Length: 428
Image (tube, rainbow, N blue to C red; front, side, top):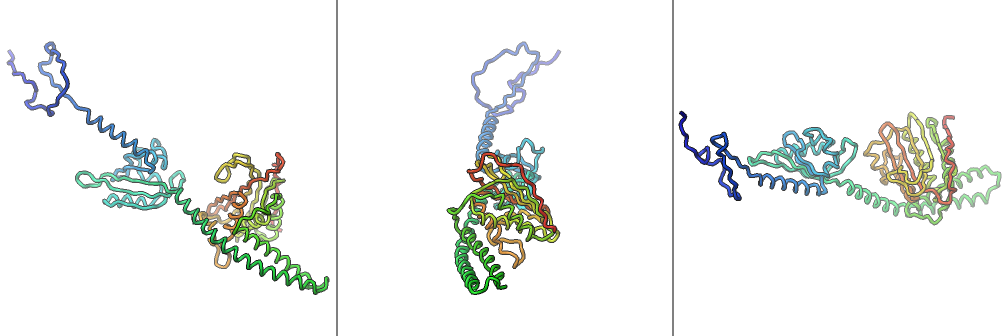
């Protein structure tokens, strides 16, 4: 016969958990149970639920912060947590690899060094720029701070990045405006003095012409002086227009005819190893100053020719109307516009040079071969005509200048959009 064992309220003499007060119990007889003893385990989930609720609130709050925030594993830099804006900057987190590494999302040496500094226990604060693998360039300011455990060891890193690209762009634009204002004031004063000198030269040429015979050999030299002096006077006028916009003398004119004149002039002046090709839509008229636009287009053509030396290449000039709402240069056009494209097959420009080409006095030419005023004047002329200028270039692949100008509204509704291709070569 088996021995009777004493029964206890618990299998163990001491309870497994501290005693807790519960609500009213409902007892049920266990007399019919096949087990002689029963162990009841009760787990309090209130703390877990409270922590989950706190975590949700914290995550929701961080998603509202206008900064990219990420928590990284201090060992391998894997992303433990990231907020919504961080995912917007570096792609949807659902597309990341398992245990996605922070430094695999972009290229930035400064942030790589900042992580190493934070792993050693020192926080980093600074400003830099990075380029995502999607090609987006971001200027940011941020911090990388270490998080220590109870033993004092760094177990995670908190990264905070604020995208300041729009602010930097506004500051750059403000500095550009200030430079242009200062340059305009300087150019205006110089143009007045220059105009006075040209006036004296032309007056002297007219006096000499009155005192010589019509068939005198000096007559041809005087014609050259008067022609060059007239161009110098036009240049002085353009410098004055650069310093202050004066559209009271603007008139509608045929841009296609103007481009044909420019192409003919480029044909006779560019080196013989440069081929000029054009594709022009007939009958496009705009409102503006033909002399200013003639100067701007000539400047771009000459710059393109210089970029193709010494081996030469192809200079392409195209003119086509743009449909309303079509985005060509940064933004969709709400009014009828025309797109003028000037491309070369020259040496191209790297991103650093491309960002500065419209700055006054910036030039990549050797000393004595340029003042750096050309492209800043071109940009001022295009903006003054209500247009937009966009440049794209890659080293070794040439450059493309796209100029968008509003079409004059007195045009017929239907333009002759069948382009007449002109292949004009300077190899003659």
